[in-house]
Image (tube, rainbow, N blue to C red):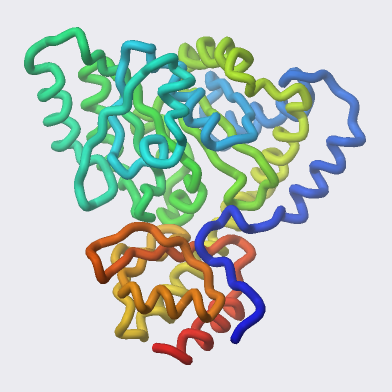
Length: 352
């Protein structure tokens, strides 16, 4: 019926922001040192220090979110160690064992709950369970949280602070997977990047730009510089030292410049709320979580999902609730427009 596909299941289908494309072209015309010793990477470090209000931090530009997470974790995850994360965390479900591979055998220990986020009381219970018999089989190295969480919800500052205090008390490092950190940050409005990270005890942040305007640009920010020393050895060993790092750093510089990273995230978040409001008019759909970023999770019947696909609307099939019901994820990006959302709704009205 409809020839044109509407891809609305992930923000990775988005293009590149024009400012970032221009920055890549500029970097191509500039000759500078390779392997991260270039002027663009130096500028990126200075910019990050200013944005995060911390002069003694280190950065490593990356091209892959999986590598960014795994390298950050392996900076403190030993081959005999363990990382505690939520069961639904990307590092646990969607990265093909990369953290274990990068660390030479480190293990992920998961916490399960229906909220999609680690709660402080659950973390304490997990640590107590592991340490109860004082066996050498489990050496906890740290904790990883995802901001936004995999169900699109937000860790509040109080939640992160409570987790951080448990980490510090137990000599554990705290990592944040920030693939959608910019979306989380703008949804909290008056909170600064510093307040959202190291000021509440985050030791390292895997900051993602690829989902929010870049071509391929991620950034590990080490607020704890000790961890950066280890990571700089591992980056070469794991095959992720980019010779032309300037092209990654140039993207990040343009992304940060004049607050573009926040502007693009605000556009995506705004249209997620608009999409939520429009989908809510259909009784066939149930919105599962509050919209705190750019993701909308919807419970629907198998038949409803099949009909959506017939309309050439392609969301992300997230998981199965029971034999008759599914969870489907809709994701907006900086390129999503209200007209595109309206087109989705017009198509849905033919069936629902």
